[in-house]
Image (tube, rainbow, N blue to C red; front, side, top):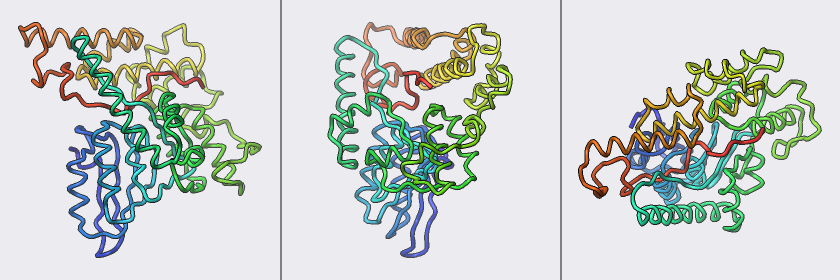
Length: 357
């Protein structure tokens, strides 16, 4: 695990300690074994602050870290530094106190998995996902006091919450007002793919806080005096469409593919470009998770749909399996990436739905 994905600051005896979780949660990033071992190595700490900026990852690692922190004798304070999405939100629920600055975001949604095999295998995969969903419901219900039905409705909708909305729903205890030094944090959040509508709400809250308004609820009547795009890491409307498309592509880490959208005569607005680039980002991450990253560039240039991308990824996995296996069934637990046995379950990092802005 790259050590830079989480850091631990040791403290003087009986003084507060701090751990920061950055990036992917799971085998490729912040895994439960290393996290727990290094926190235990701190010894007897009375107060532990956990800072989170993560888009999520694998559910089993998140649940293990959550339960470890809940059982830890220290008072645990969770601070969301940027986003606590998917599995990142599970870990956040471990705090005795959960603090979100007014310009941060939390997102929850249902777990998902890749599955392959017989009809029996696929039915079992669905049952397995429902078991993980039940685990998420238990976690969120216990923290928020909401009913299981209410939480299920939020999970089904891939719910993004501003800090104020998270507070309203019981997902955090304290919303901290922010000052004017927030443009960089908002630009970073935009690069993570958070819907512009959510970020616009954040800016409204910040504007209200700067003018002495309520940082939790915001002031709906507040006039920010600036277009939201000026503060959210995207270009102002006065820029040409080509400039806007390029800026959005770069913000999403897809600048090398910008020609695919610049030359598409079906893209006439920045919103259309944003939707197309979000789809390309999902295709890129689908290929990466399926260990077929070489497919991504061609699919993005061809402006393939998500369904087309999934088919090509499945075909590539099938060809790889055919090249290495001669039997007519998938052997159990052989390391085959398509095998349903032992597969990770993700609290998905990127939603499959396109958010209307």
